Image (tube, rainbow, N blue to C red):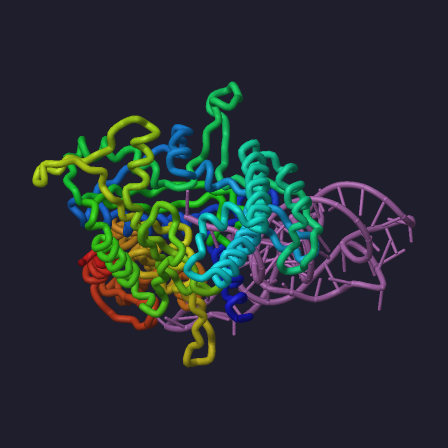
Length: 512
RNA sequence: GCGGGAGUAGCUCAGCUGGCUAGAGCAUUAGCCUUCCAAGCUAAGGGUCGCGGGUUCGAAUCCCGUUUCCCGCUCCA
């Protein structure tokens, strides 16, 4: 375990040292759980996006991409359920240091009374056997009535407190009921605090309830509200998908583990609209398709794990995560959800607009079902970094740190290195540099010994190095050095250029 | 939000029973050397010791507060 913790630390240091990820506002001591992507990080991130976008949009004739605004009409979040569900009243027990949802504590308390009623019913059944009339019993038994009265009373108070967002009343209710912490058994509670997972801000210069809008907590709703626009203008036929890459914001209580959980993050989502009844077979299809996408990167199948959700969100009828083996263990990387027609139906209701698809073959219209694939871009970035980072022991006993980033994703594809800084070698190297630049991200480096420059490029994951030596001036051959094997081959400049361009092309990942 | 640990140069850290101008290695820059797998030579730059306050003749070091990061709990559509 200690080694895993160390390895995340090493990766964080490495990411900062080489310009992949910096703490945001670093010179002001950073901002909690916010990070900036540096010169190499931005490049790597863009490459990941490109891989995802192309495999979704370019490789599927029935998937198109959009880019919706972060600001959306406030009612969107009422319809989606986020306003209600992303709003939790929380309370801490001061002794056990445990945190609970205040309303859940009360509900669990209510459940105790319900259990008592159930017990009475069972007792009654035993005593009276077949002659027992449950309904009659519930209406007349004094013990039951007393408990039921309690339940009703608590429920009334709980609802009143929740509806008025009266946090003090909620706390008072917990104290009056003498609810104790299940762990410590203590009744030493903090204040109840409201945690809203959505960031809000004001639209326009006049503040007020009407102008209060949210930063989107997920990108999916931007797709749902554009369902008809895209379907009509793109003449899309079901099944079809809409893809989107964009930022989302959640005011997490604790955001941690480097870029794994941030308050501002980027999602790559695709909502696939299907005929009702066919959603589960498409769900399976996308599960497999997405695993294939991950496995094409070659990190190893054992790095991934499929985790089915047992407890489903209110909108889903099937859900699973693709988990990745991060240094801190297997964690969610991508979610695949069968969202049914929940979202479109809700938007129909709240907007009053029909969000239906007319199926010409069946000659009927319906609200499509939705299968969603949703991957965290920042998590994908972290997964790539973690899987690529290796501290290798070489045969001669020395060590090297190398990022074995898949070639197509590597921020820099090739380094052009003159063996020495004289005899016209830099000039020759520059020629090659300029030839390659229009095609791939290329670095030129003439400082320090050749071995040192190789190591520097290993550390940022450059898959190829082209070394220009004296022989190059005579016969136009160079040494092509491979990052992963450290092997070298002597080939012509022309061959080397072709090889580098071909091997690092994103197309090598897209063949399906 | 609670508890634990930490914050000193770009990175990794030493110094921290208070006391000269705050150090090392690596990295960076310039020059030398010219060598196909780091760690050759010379020189230089870089730090208000996370921030604020206090104690003291004197604080990186002691005290208080605060902030950021890591770990655990918690939360996680």
